[in-house]
Image (tube, rainbow, N blue to C red; front, top):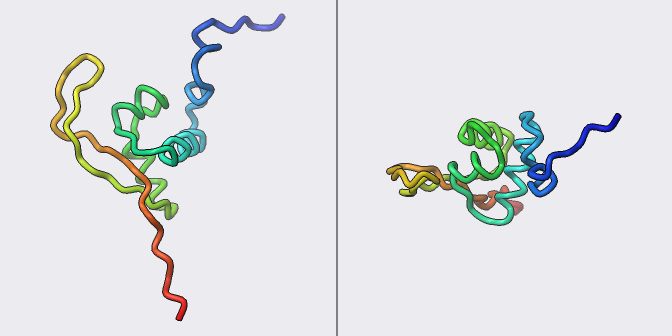
Length: 97
């Protein structure tokens, strides 16, 4: 018998279901290619519980992810003085003289 899919899961993006580390890296990179994303949004929309840890791992793999601190309110309206906003920087190419 095939398991029924709840309506919420049918409407939500597929990236919300796969929480293994490799999938989190892929989803985070895909999202950052579209533009900046803050840590609160990464937790909520991409289901990444520790965005800083995933960003650190991607940086160690030579992805040029930059961080800018911002002030932001969470979904409950609570203010946060330091929220990381992540964006893709440029890759420095070695001089080819």
